[in-house]
Length: 248
Image 1 (tube, rainbow, N blue to C red):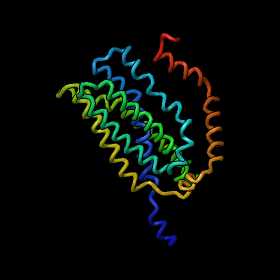
Image 2: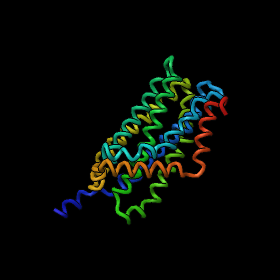
Image 3: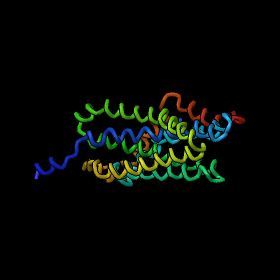
Image 4: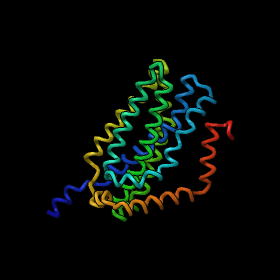
């Protein structure tokens, strides 16, 4: 039985790189690609800043809901579900680009992308700790960072370059729709791929059995550490001032 389990064990090489590539790409798409997208759609710099300034917020406040994720489902479940939801949200952005309500629609779906991506980050980082032993964690830390940075490069440069290339043959709206449809297909594919290659560590299932008291203690510690971060109040104030400058 022990030999059979060892044969079934999937190498971390099969999922660490793709997991962290999937973690960085939505962040780049929401925080960077969206700026170029809205500028090419005809919005002024002031309008782009006004509409996109709050897209960063989910990554700032994700410690506030991260302790509750373990109470609902496993980290593996959150990773797979958020990747599928990211695919649906990218498809939503693509679909609304050519509608009369494109601005409202894309903003809503970018918000969905931001919250889904922030939740995926929590699940992926936690799963990395549970799915690997201490030796493997130390070995793959550089690999996961490399593929995360590769995803940022692809998001910052590759997606914008692809949209620009497509615009030589079609309208701006259609070029961006194809880019976002491509991202939708990629994340749906990643979710299906990871469903088969991600391991199922026993420690991950045990995390969902936290008692209410342990959960409250964990949340209290997370909440306190969130506001102990350096310059956190200044960051929140800057977010508020970027959207409501009249009150600053």
